[in-house]
Image (cartoon, rainbow, N blue to C red; front, top):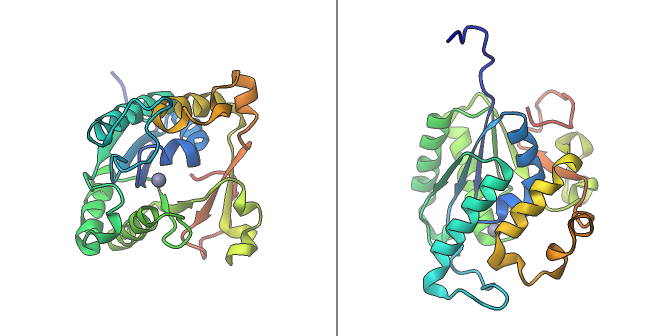
Length: 236
Ligand SMILES: [Zn+2]
């Protein structure tokens, strides 16, 4: 086999807190890059075992939840085209209480191992949930301590970053990714997280109606606000 002219795979490492963060927040983007042969590694800090949603009608309890959510996340990864899934085995709702230095050291080791072009995580202040903010803070520290060659971006919710000035940012800090061609995969991933989405009737409407609830864009904040202004519609 002649690999001489093979273009090296682009790699993306996503470090989030719970099963479903990847699908609900940036599933379109992950599906888009997976479809472009980007090698994606997803790290979930927890298995989401403290989630309040148990299916509709409920089919889970506290004891069965971690294993079920892990399986549902694996299914969602299949829907999105994510090939590697890792867990940090932190208890749900306790990420903020884990020693920050050791957590960021673990994540730094993963960054070294994966050697990604792009790292995604939560913004440590705009994460919206203590677990999100804590994993974002640790991943940001890990990225800094590895002096990584790639780029770090923060995931954001919905179309909030259509108006970045409300959060102290400007348009040039925002990457706006067109995901309209990947909403089928995003919808499939939502449905894979069955225990979380069964109670949301819109998810189970006919595909075209459910898909219409999604925005056509997903938004990311650049961690390095000084970085040169390349085209702001692509993470790579
Ligand atoms: Zn979450």
